[in-house]
Image (tube, rainbow, N blue to C red; front, side, top):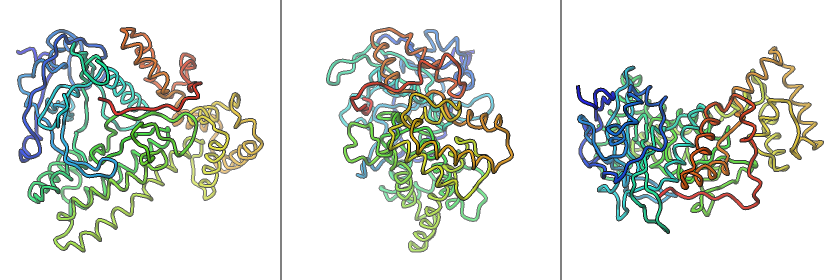
Length: 486
């Protein structure tokens, strides 16, 4: 038995059954001195991999891109995308897909190396990635997973021993990313831009087989494919809004067909509640601000619908009508998911007409008093109203009385209400200053802050004493800015 088999690699590449226009065969560039600095042992085990062997030289060689597993057929995927509203042809410029790991349970997950060197789609870039951004994606994606939000995940981060030249030399690293797949709205846009209807149909059929097999027998499975993607995106973005997560770069190439969060470049979590919050240094117009995320998701889905028109109906006008009718369901789906989530956050187990105003008024109070988003709901959960100007305000006292009157309209005990709230209001999130603190320390080979942060974020709903050091927002008055990871 080979080392790859004992480690547990069981790689296929069904994506290569698609026309070759969707990918280019390529190999990651070897690392000079690979060194494992972050490793997700629990995820490795769930993938059917031997965690101990992965941490040894043979395993690290694969994780760093220095060696390809025996049955791997590594590729870079082609796709397109609207980036800040402007269409362009793209592709994996610094990512190599090793293949699809088949787990012991029969599930299929992409194993991708991000920062593994140049590909056909690098467009002048070096295809490499720096340590800080790769660790940042590892931290945030694992935090999102712990929060119960669909996401790509980090299996490991490996330092390559090679410098990455940006404004200054940086330490190079590879992130091993795990995803249900890396198929995006932009993948469909790529096929549509090529005006290759046969390729488009093959891609749609592949996505149905892989992600939505339940729609195969529908009268028109492509209608149902679109309906299902709409629903998953409505649910996903509602979950973002409910924890104050701001993606930062909601281009169509960063919207997965599977409904997972992908690409953690300029993302961050909101501290003070302000719907206009933007963190990305390049989002000068606020296109991807917190309050705009649902609308941008709908806009992206409209671009997806445009690619599917030939599959919806032979008559273009009829196809457009079908697309518009389906897309029109997004807003109500999103609102339903968001309202349910907000009711849970407030301990409301049933529905009443006045709930919308109750929720809207709380958010307006939070914005007016510049209250911290996460800690406001944490305080409501704990019935501990201190250290916030909001809680000392008369208008909040009136609102809280309305909340109690509303809760009186349901039969659940206070204990049940509190438990519902604890399950939906995280005590901790990846506070931006804590993430930066961990990354800065890691650059200096001080790993304790990174490991302590990861341990804290594993159980965001635990409300344990050891989390208290991580609940406070930054005291800095300088606006926090994030940058696309390079």
